[in-house]
Length: 356
Ligand SMILES: C[S@@+](CC[C@H](N)C(=O)[O-])C[C@H]1O[C@@H](n2cnc3c(N)ncnc32)[C@H](O)[C@@H]1O
Image (tube, rainbow, N blue to C red; front, side, top):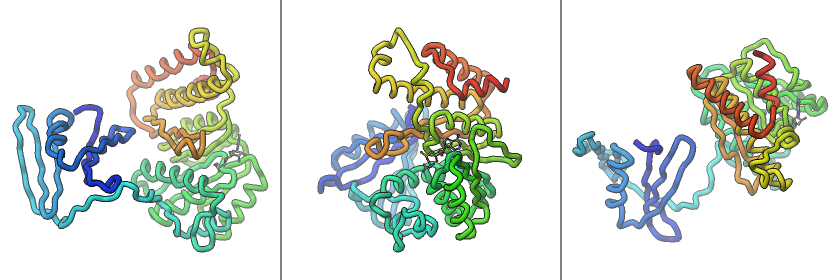
């Protein structure tokens, strides 16, 4: 009914006490609220009929479905449930990663992320968290495609590339080929050697520049993790040109807009270096998102990783969709208005204009 898609109420143990926790889910976020164990009925009453019209309740041996009709009448349907015990779970459960510690991903042992027995090397823990999170975002968005060709632009040492390849081929059993591209020739040679060593036949690495990269084959997904400054724009532009279905991009060092941006109206934002830099990052990435929308991509800006692990913590996730022309034009107009306001002309916009 409202902006929430779903609310889930579960018993929890927090600070040694039993409570109920409501998790309300919007399209992009989850909001949590705890309330006392005795207050279940009144809390269900609060949201049922106001925020939601349907409720599914699970208890030991019984499942109950409740529906509020448009006239406010309650329809109740009970069935036997296979669940015979419901327990309150402690709230401090360890985060479950798609590739938990102990998973042996052989190339990543060679690369120094995992030890021989599958533990994460201490100094690599932040990187491990980042790539696991990125993998979650990939896993969450891709459907049941049998075949996927992915390009990882600015792959660097390619921890992410190897992990995505391993996960999609070995765990999800998909027919996936990945090309990693980077400017660093020696790094690319090493990645190709590692791929050959583990007989990852559909994983290859190419030495080259994102800006002028060309390919004939179809590209289903483009990913970038910290491709520097405008390299991200070129990667996004390629993805748009190829009509790639999925784009996942964590930008970094957004210098271009920082050099151009100005606004008399928002002078305090322009006056202090650090604020100007952060404003430029937000302007750059919100413009990228809006331009992707203008090109027919349903686009989300997601928190990629906790700020304490990396300040580069925003992920652009875009999925090709069938937006109407009117909707796309509106996004373009909004992006242009913002560019005029801040006196910027970012690379992605210039590349798109050049092609018209
Ligand atoms: C910060 S590193 C990130 C590497 C890797 N994606 C990761 O997250 O571990 C950025 C990489 O992008 C590469 N790069 C930057 N601009 C590029 C361009 N125009 N074409 C190809 N690679 C580029 C750099 O050589 C570098 O390896």
